[in-house]
Amino acid sequence: MTLHPLDMALVAIYAVGIVSIAWWVSREKKGHKKDAGDYFLAGQSLPWWAIGASLIAANISAEQIIGMSGSGYVVGLAIASYEWMAALTLIVVGKYFLPIFLERKIYTMPQFLEQRYDHRVRSVMAIFWLGVYVFVNLTAVLWLGALAIHTITGLGLFYGMALLAGFSIAYSLYGGLKAVAMTDIIQVVLLVIGGLFLTYTVLNTVSGGTGAFNGFVTLMDRLPEKFDMILEAGHSHYDDLPGLSVLIGGLWVINLSYWGFNQYIIQRALAAKSLPEAQKGIVFAAFLKLLMPLIIVVPGIAAVLLAPDLDIADGAYPTMLNMMPVGIKGLIFAALVAAIVSSVASMTNSVSTIFTMDLYAHRRPNQSQRHYVIVGRLVSVVALMVAMATAQPLLGQFDQAFQYVQEFTGFFTPGIVTLFVLGMFWKRATAGGALATAIGSAAFSVALKLFWPTLPFMDRVGVVFLLCMLVAVTFSFLGAIPSREKVVDLEGISFKTTAGFNLSTLAVVVILVAFYAAWW
Image (cartoon, rainbow, N blue to C red; front, side, top):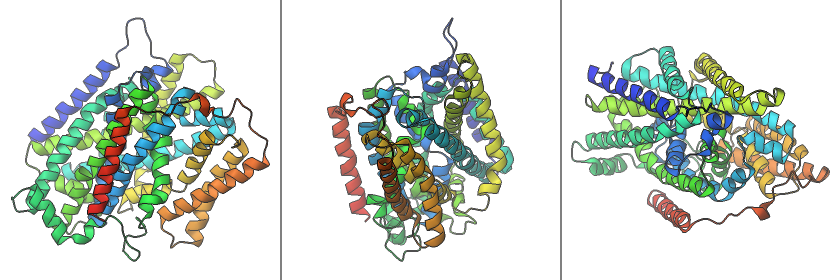
């Protein structure tokens, strides 16, 4: 299947427009050359709306749109817990983590680990994050994005990945984080409007043309099993979403790691004008997260009725997209491409930031700022080439890539959360305890997977988190007390938030309670 010329023209106009805007916002003022702060942290000048939009644009990619819609096709609305619980997690990050990070004036998450522990911890975690971003996140986004392009246009998978990588480079390589963040507001608007229209169209089709609301009611009537938010033991997909663990268990560990300590996500907040501006951006992103399942998961559920014989579940969203009329299909396809390339650009920028600032600059500390920017750009290109080369071998055999990504990263997230939470809020935590935790997280996860294979991965994450806490505390008590320079002085940090932030928190909680009460 190929796109109509009108659809192709709309996508081309969008691509040219985004690249032009990115270069315009990234232009250098007369007499000023980009330094590392400009390139990696946008000169710490981002407003709240750019932060919130960029958080969502970095997060919502092929992994979410294609992968989560595929999980909606197989599992149902329960997969939306990743999105809805993320909204509450963002509030926690904005209130308790951001004040510490911004007070410490850091570029990267590994940098904080060196400030709090030592350079060994920084290097180990920097290498780990580089591996995950390139071989898990980038490969997943490129592969699933290419799969969507192939389904819609017939373009070969490798050429689809090359197209996405080239587009990402064209608009982000020169300007860095500022180019990514300032264009993300356009990306998110296109994603939300296009996604809502697609959802409306498929629901209207389900209802036989009597409206989207009737289509949603029809889905609940004909597919009631797809609207169970909390899966009971014995459910065929209980291993993916084990009951109450999505509310009070391992999903919290996964979300805290992703939204609080994940470089390509939190980097937007680190680039804020101020802490209140960053917190407003966090709240904006939280409300957008509440909306995402309507755009992503519901079309996947509708595909059960409209395309019941799909070869693979991850084909659900592209198949629904192919139902759109000429012109509208081009706009929604552009929205899909927008989400994908924004995430690719965000990930490559973070890979370049971690490599340059955490590994390279340590070995070559006396280079010019311009030199570090050039190194960062080269690293971005190399990361994309490696991800393209390894995407098919790593992901080609999986039916639901979203669950694969969660399973793999779940080996390490318990240790990451332990390192940061104890590092921020427990003065006795030591570098020895941190290293033991980092190693123990992977070791415990592999051991439990091998010797307790029936334990759902989300529960495994929760168990490993508790074991990591035990290891960190034990090794810390066995080691020397950290110096005053290493610990975080919480007395000098204010966790007080504005009335607007507090009211938004209440609104998020009320909406979440209503959602889970309706589809328990």
